[in-house]
Image (cartoon, rainbow, N blue to C red):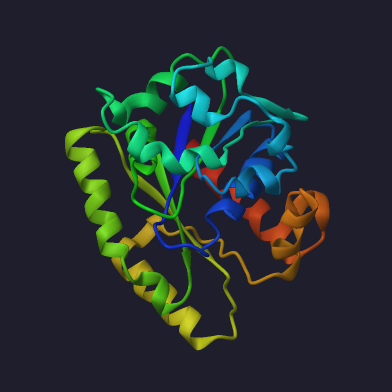
Length: 254
């Protein structure tokens, strides 16, 4: 079964893009076919994977405007497939506001993919925008990266409210199936208290693998590399690989 996973949190700096990039690469290493869709106007996901954004004519923006077919905007990074974003996406809310069915633009495009994928990862912008709404309308699953600090919990209820509204009105099958605790340090009391609180509220939805604070994870994007390419022996690589194994185990159990 194909999984379309929206990686979403309206708060910035919680490792959404890092999670999209490295979960994609990790799943690929475990013999899954993966497509990453960069929906953020900042194109951080594309840059993190070394995609030459400034040299690419057609991106997710042209695809959503129906100027080009989705199969013609897929960038091949070895076996990992990426649909890059561009700064033009920053105007999407305004430009698409009068288009009938604007919430379904991404979903309709994904239905025309000519190549099958086991996982499609949607890297969402740090806002509850029309583009994020498109991702939620398209998704089978939601993963929420959550930095293990108190401030990261602010606005969490608003995100949950938005997800519930989308489920009621646009995507009845939408579920939060994973919360990824990021930037974790076992030595920090606050980190452990936040995780305890999140587990009490969400239970088994919280992944048992925590992504530890790790300098190579922060360094890898500047080289256009995944953590597995940049420092395969780092804690970051170990954590993301374990997370991917947990994702697959959950898939098998469902």
